[in-house]
Length: 101
View 1: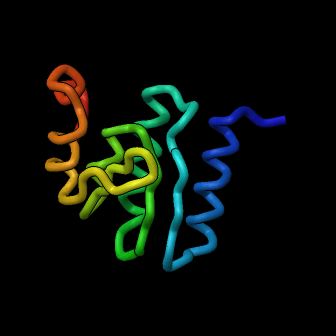
View 2: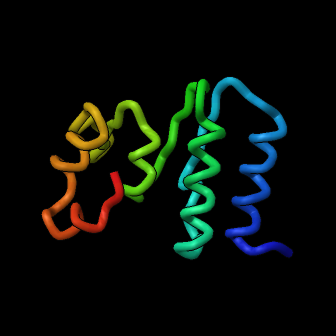
C-alpha cells in the first residue's frame, strides 16, 4: 500500500519517463504536505515546459505554471484569461495574499 501523496509522486514520475507531448494532471498536489507540494510544483515547471498541459486544480499556487487559465462554475466558463486575471476575479482579497502567482 502507498499513501495518496506517494501515488501522486509515482504518477508524476511515470509522466517524466513517458515523455508524452500532452499532459493531463488532475489535482497533482492534492494530499501533499507544503514542502512536498513545493517540490512537486518545481518539478512540474520543468516537466510541463514545451508540452501542452491541462492542469485541473483548486490550488492557486499551480496557476503560476499556466499561460492561460479558465475558471469553471456550474459547468460553464465563468472567467478566462491570464492566471493573474482569473485569480483576481475568483478569489477574495484575503485568499489572494496567500496565493503564489
